Image (tube, rainbow, N blue to C red; front, side, top):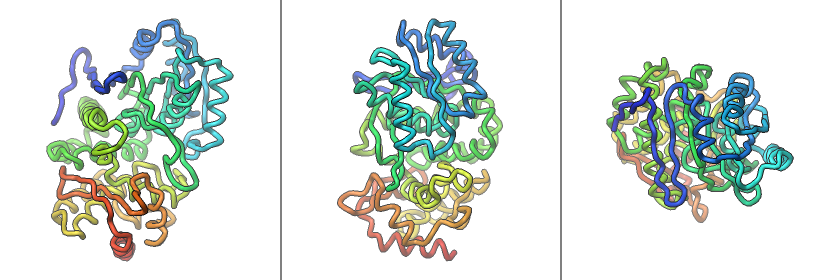
Amino acid sequence: MILAPSTPAARTVVPVALEGRAYDIHIGRDQLAEAAALIAALAPGARAALVTDETVARLHADALEASLARAGIGTTRITIPPGEASKSYARFAAVCDALLDAKIERNDLVIAFGGGVVGDLAGFAAAVLRRGVRFVQIPTTLLAQVDSSVGGKTGINSSHGKNLIGAFHQPALVVADTALLDTLSQREFKAGYAEVVKYGLIDDPAFFDWCEVNWSRVIAGGPERDQAVAVSCRAKAAIVARDEREEGDRALLNLGHTFAHALERLTAYDSSRLVHGEAVAIGLALAFRFSQRLGLCPGQDAIRVSRHLDNIGLPSRLQQVPGGAGSAEDIVAAMAQDKKVKRGALTFILARGIGRSFIAPGIPADDVRGFIDDELAG
């Protein structure tokens, strides 16, 4: 379903309907100016710790802190290095200690101001600090605005795999200012777009059709960008409301991610080689080609997916991983720690066509290995 931005001033408010933990996502350009008032209304008299990374701090943190100060909210800034490497035990411990040094109490707030790495790390720290304090997500990347800031998944990485240490901890508020995306590099923005198109591939073929027509305008900015963020957030909010803790169809949001997380692990989370959205793009294309190989998905749908990603400038094949993706055996071994593994058996999100994804448990490792061998040889 395609949604027009609501009034006033092209702001869209998407509710996340969780009993006892409901919150709103505010979407639109220049929403950062409104964030302080929303936060002040949420927690009158509270103090806040602003967790951000060095890049976002340089570009935007002064403006947000000044706005919060005008609203009567005192802040302490905690800055981390950018990149996936910050989702580590050591950085998590440092952030927790910094929050304690700032004397953040249970009635105070942690504000995650950055991309997915900042949101996951700050959210996990908020989940365990004093056994849980409230936190606010102000995502600054497309990927974070349409995916990681919504739904309460928080965590860090382990040497065994991505996001294996964490907690479900819902934010109290999400403010997605699409004007902040203007400062992203083309590479980062396009990487985030992979998570947008994913929603069409899961269960909304009309949205995938829309993406094929409008992707260049989404990248350029304007109402199409806000529309894409709103549709994505509404799709994720609906799934999270049905299945908060991934005990059922929330796993559909991992379309392409079993492949993607394995590739990220094999490239040592080195963003100079591969960022998360690029890994997801390859994973989406592989999921559809694997579905085709298993006789589940029409070949023309798998071709459409790869062609769309190619048109945007996203990778769609293992050969496009800088420095190589490893062997089929390496990739299957990296999948063994995927969060969807049950009793040692691999679970994939596969598709019967565009917008017809489903959870496929118990996929034999030999089938996956043979498919990847052919992909690497292709």
